[in-house]
Length: 334
Ligand code: B12
Ligand code: SF4
Ligand code: SF4
Image (cartoon, rainbow, N blue to C red; front, top):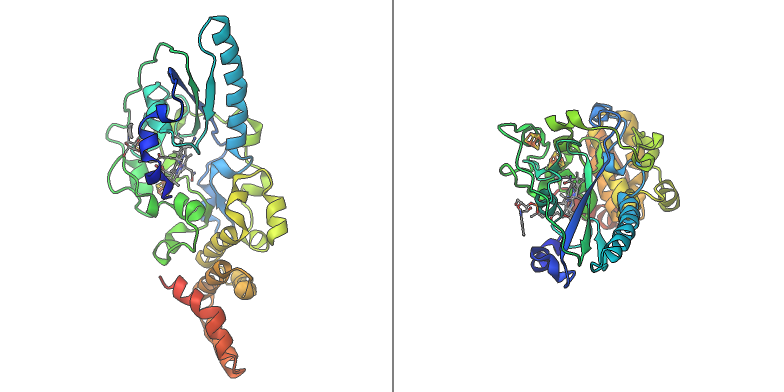
């Protein structure tokens, strides 16, 4: 995520993205789940996918909604003789969406660093409409975290060095989505069965008691992504991965990273019956997958790993062992 540092100057001043900026209209979209998002964490043969990724990609949905709202807004601005130029942003642009949303009164940046709303709890996406029109500003929201520290205490990887500060390098959301290689060894056990993102700090927020289930059907969990079996997910090849995750944000990370995440969950499952799934992928074409497969097999059947190595040696296949396994073994040993 080097781009965060690279785009810092542009993030500091929204006028870098829109020279004639008059106002920013911030919007929040409710994606409240209809089930306890942490319920699947205990089902070790199944996967937990973060709430935001259980159906359609929110970027597409919100961008469409922002464009529709934006064009009505521009028409109204024209009618009132105001400048009608607009630009819409969601997530990917160097826009400080959370501080801006707090300034616009939508909520406050909680100790987990995300925006919390008194109406929607922690389950809201943010989007922005930049306009040349100068509008009266809403009052900013103030902090309502008080002495609570539930989100800080539940984090499985201890990613909060202090309240309101996140060390993204330790966050499971970063490790399973943004981090390109194999998740560093130190974090693998704590990841449990979280194969894409994490919701623990969001889900424990007491303000969620005011949250409602999202009205957007495309954000409600797909049945096959609510608690999928690890054994089914780990068998996806490139084609079936792309088909299964068509329209989903998960597609972006690609099959190799996804299957490596699933293999980490398999390694954490404590289910020896899943060892065969890992063994089958020891020869996968992706080094990332092979490395994760070795680690998973080591967790579930360490003796099997040694006997496989011995079998290779017995067949005098030592060069292959070195070529195929050594790089991954050193990678998983990081
Ligand atoms: C990079 C990023 C990540 C990174 C880093 C997260 C982070 N907390 O920064 C990773 C990959 C870890 C991540 C994870 C998640 N993310 Co994210 N992520 C972003 C992204 C693209 C940029 C955030 C950013 O700028 N971070 C940099 C840090 C330094 O800024 P900060 O967190 O805002 O906090 C500091 C500043 O606000 C500063 N500050 C305060 N006032 C001002 C004013 C100025 C001028 C400046 C310069 C600074 C400043 O003080 C704060 C403390 O240091 C935003 C989209 C966007 N464009 O904003 C989405 C976004 C924050 N993510 C989002 C979501 C949903 C998630 C996850 C819940 C996904 C998941 N389930 O796995 C997790 C939550 C993890 C967590 N506890 O934060 C939503 C959050 C919605 C909300 N209600 O707040 C956003 C807003 C996307 C969206 N459009 O909806 N994410
Ligand atoms: S999303 Fe998960 S790993 Fe990241 S800070 Fe929150 S609880 Fe910790
Ligand atoms: S869990 Fe508590 S400390 Fe964390 S954001 Fe919610 S209210 Fe604030």
